[in-house]
Image (cartoon, rainbow, N blue to C red; front, side):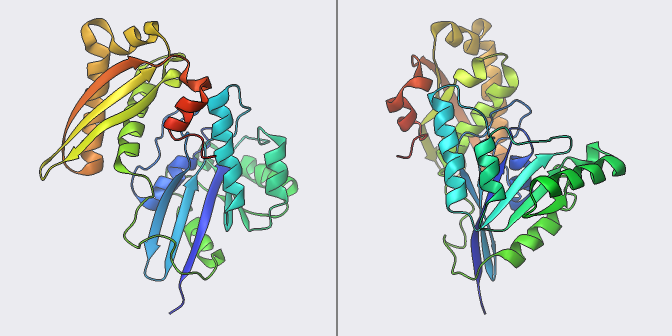
Length: 294
């Protein structure tokens, strides 16, 4: 029996629904999904296995113009998404008219691999508007196959999945067949804590934060986790902790509930806050947090 395998890379503007789509394919919350911009900072591989296929999905940060070192590093992940793709999924939202970076747009229109342009969030549109959008994108990206979807409502997701299966090259699997992702558990602990910070704090706080899981000990019935929340300034440390520790406690409780669902096991979590001055512009610190792969 022949076997198919391939890298399917998802590209698009921030908050267009890339993570929602990947999680719809995989059935686990691998990428964090919130309505604030810039939630996915790493390339995440989610892997879907069948008897005769293996799809390796990468979820890239939304395309932005880099304002500081961290964002430049995030854009490097997007560039690498063009390099190893067998199939590109280019996601746009109904109402969008262009990608935020011309150079990336040119790469998509000149891609040598199949491009599926997914017109997402069609549940927020009507038939007339949708037809106008399909015509617009056909003109802009003539090399793409356009599929209207709603990732959140699982509409047409199967159509995309089946089309990917048809387009994938014949190949042995790239990863063991029981692998769900190439990221270690600590990565997901960090992402889940960071999601709770995105939801609970305002302004620049979520973007000045990095999480480091210092301890992840799994026992038969419980997982013990110690994680450090890194901030850039002393004033941010006070905001994260909150009055008598109330804000940090809330993040801890919400993260624990989410982690228990994710790992299907009881979780004991301890959170600490440290000041790590100007980490977003520090090459050494960025490498330490896994942003720069050079």
